[in-house]
Image (cartoon, rainbow, N blue to C red):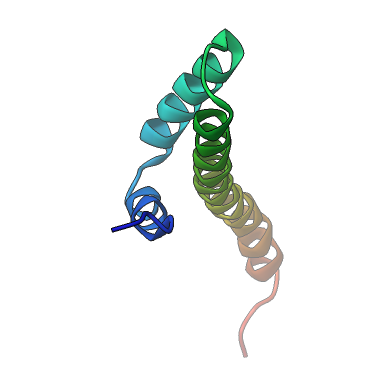
Length: 85
């Protein structure tokens, strides 16, 4: 059976930010160390791309939550000045 990358993608979908970041650090370390075949290097690169997507997804979600939290006090103070009839 050949690996078409589906298992790796499914696996990265369940990773938390810290797990993906730590694995990405290891992938980069291995690539920088060298000593791998071209095929191994390509597989590591592809894995790194998937891990980077996972990290980016988590960071975008965190940014959206932060933006929403920061917007709430402004909305409340703007609404608080208007009285109801």
